[in-house]
Image (tube, rainbow, N blue to C red):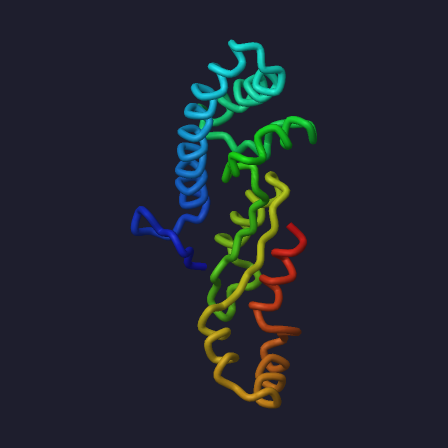
Length: 168
């Protein structure tokens, strides 16, 4: 399997996911710190909503400082509502799209790594073969159906990605 983001020059999806998640956490950390600074002023003035928001932000801060995902925190619906306007990246659901070789859908240790990480996070994994998808896109309907049947595919990868996106 090859990943969309290979930072070290070698294929290691677990490392790539860690790098991306760290970058997302750092972006959210910056947002959180700025929000805390802004909301502290209102909270000191006695604003009840600001005090509640500040409490949630202070709960999020250590998670982000440790490059953790906010979706891993046990936040109530009210707490999430208080910070929704900040659109934290690490609070959003995750879907991994794994680009594999034509024969890489099974017995693929790289894909297994991604699936293991996704299972721990409660995330979705959609394996696709970009080369096959490019071929499928160039065929007419009848040829596409025949080609997919030969490969044992029920539907194009794009359809699987769309369906998975709605399930997140």
